[in-house]
Length: 268
Image 1 (cartoon, helix red, strand yellow):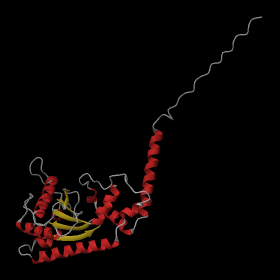
Image 2 (image 1 turned 45 degrees about the vertical axis):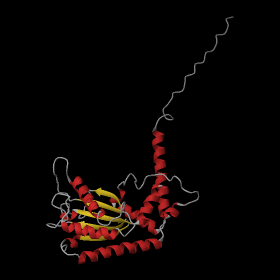
Image 3 (image 1 turned 180 degrees about the horizontal axis):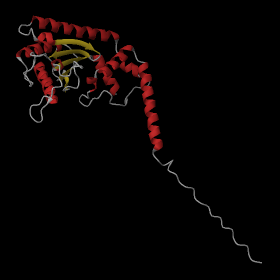
Image 4 (image 1 turned 90 degrees about the vertical axis):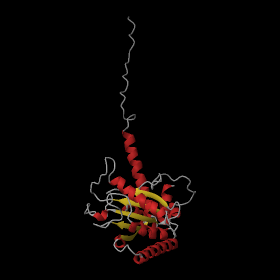
């Protein structure tokens, strides 16, 4: 009788699939985390006071606010150093009384500037081209050009004599405040060029800087100007008429301390 042959069992290895080792799940997880972050941000905003909501809405209405000033972006991210148990609204909720006092101070400064401009001699034409508006960011004073009536020499950053007197009046009054100041330059959509490497971007920045230099020498405190920005024609004053000369302007923004505090809190 022959010995029984051994039984040989051949097991085939399982096929390895890349499901657990691929990257598809990472994409889905990242989308989930992003959605949750957006959800909690919305929930935090809903719980804020009306003043904070108004300030946040103002920032989104005014794109200029999102300029990154000295590497201090509004949404720098993270909240290191938050005290345990301290709610976000405790850091950002402004004092209504302080808001009212600041508003009154800015309104008073605007009225003082208006009165002094009305009394000043030799600027009758240009003083009608100065606008005062209040936004969530603070007081905005705009020096707006018109056809045949400009604050600067044509195509340059050289201030006219009347413009120097106007900036002196504004600087002397704003120097009495403790608020930060931002100066912006704007142009229209005319393709201005002065050489191969000088256009509307350079012109708008140079005009803002010319206004800064004049104002710092005539009343603004040292360090009061925090930022100088040139926007070229990216933020038109007359949006449906990009070539309108009123788009050429210098904006002097007196920043609300509440807006600055909100920005600082969101950076922490």
